[in-house]
Image 1 (cartoon, helix red, strand yellow):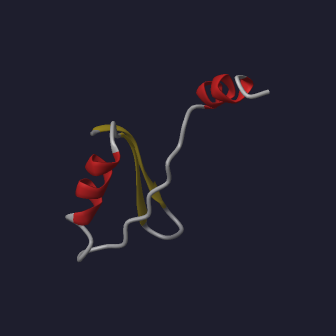
Image 2: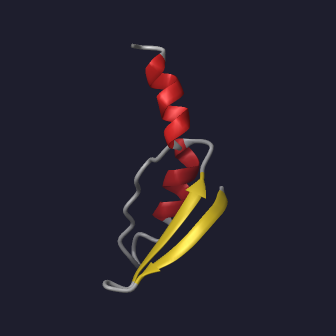
Length: 59
């Protein structure tokens, strides 16, 4: 797991980090260890140009 960037949401004091995770097991393991301390929300994302490349194959 590699940290790409980090932010603080000033309106809610929420910590936001973008990480590069190679597999879903790494994502679960990283979040699970914090589950009793804080709420973890995960959102899978992809760079726009990569998505467009994938989508163009189906059009």
